[in-house]
Length: 130
Image (cartoon, rainbow, N blue to C red; front, side, top):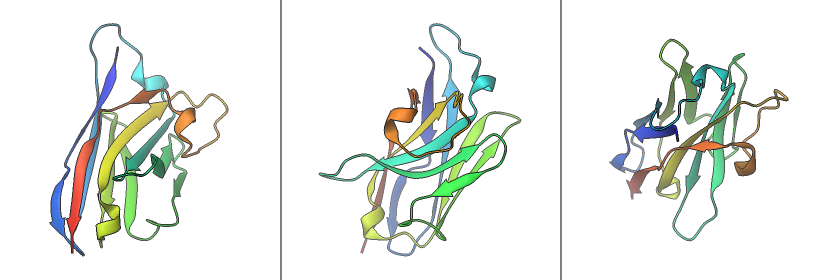
């Protein structure tokens, strides 16, 4: 099955920055990734449920969780179907495994609900130390 692959995670100090990247990695059967219209970043901290961080629609709309608004920026490069998450002013509470996800988004409703995304990456660890 086609999967997404995240990169760019790591360890930073409080107040630091990181840029996460995500691209589709085809294997097995091929899905036309050009049909994905919604892309999103999620995270799961230690002992916490997976939560939505930000999402972007092919038409340019973006949404952010209140906890990251003004610090994180989601963007997408349509030329190579890459998704990015620029994270600034990182805090220890941002420590988590970060996942990218995509979906056909047939109703064009942009959301960060976990169950609305059918394709996922395996995650990349982000650790912010105080």
